Image (cartoon, rainbow, N blue to C red; front, side, top):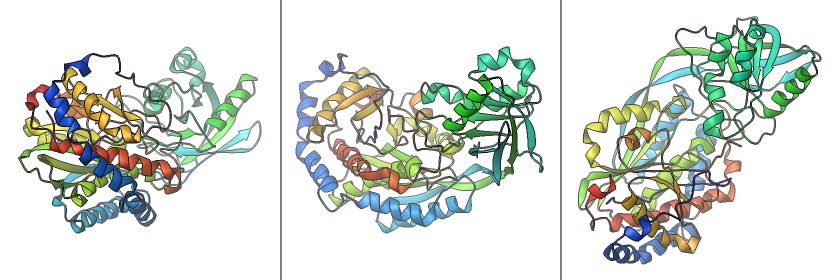
Length: 468
């Protein structure tokens, strides 16, 4: 069994897309001894909840994040701001007196967007809001002026390949879910280039928009020409589609000054509370410190990083010492595909048997209702039982699938994982990622996530092999 495995940070804005596990029989497989052990920690759970919700720590993490985000700002991979953020957190973790605070070197991509704009020239003049996608090549200095071809899917593009040559392809794909729809952002430029397009503009991957385009990483293929690519707002994508549906010719001028530099030096930031009984066994909690260069990076993933830090802070404040080592990792280079996490995995996978559970918080800091979990049936049953300790704050649901970009390497190798299950793409990847958007729900999330630290005290009953 795992120490502290319930330090989960689930922040739900919309209804969780995972299937609740209330109907499975894993709950009935838990021994009475384990149930009694878990129930015995109700006083510790209450102490953590009281400190986080009503005590001196009730606003601490929010206030820490506000100062950090206002001081450092956005933290793009390879940027000076990210370097400053890492130094800031390294110093803060040391000052708090956490143990084994150190930096682990990582090579990260270094891309900068530069000046960018899009202007519809015909049938009328209209400034199109754009946000260049990570790793995009620039346009020529004079920009690209071309007719637009609007498609609603890759299938439509394939059917209209001959029409795409020499044009700017605009994808106005419907939003189904982030996991399904994000492929247009990731692959849109490649598929358009295969059809002979000179650039691609993609409707932002979000169910909600206030004329604010999202950014994100996209991927080229070595055997396909690289064309400039950016996201546009939902409103502009719909407008262009309406005009096109009337048979009206649309001309757009696109200019992007993006630059790609050699990989930069960066660091994963690590701090611990060393376990009292099994110090070599690790419970990993995490969030990523880097962000996109729009907004403040407060939500993706400043909130997740600071909630993860708060988990250690509350344990320390209460004078608790977990049986296994509680390790905080603040990843770098997550937005470029989990670069920092992948390098961390390669460095530490030789000791994978010592990793009892891995967790990341990276889907917002909204009102929590439960958590997502990936692991054995027996582990899920224990998880379900443990969640009963959170009845005072009405956060007891278990959902399928606990993973994420930064921990999936471990989960795929059989380490149990905890992760978020709420889509929060109304605000992430765009200018709206500010401290203001965190709101009161951030504070609610703090007590949910940190109350789960109680698990560190009851993990020695069962053999850890039962979890994997």
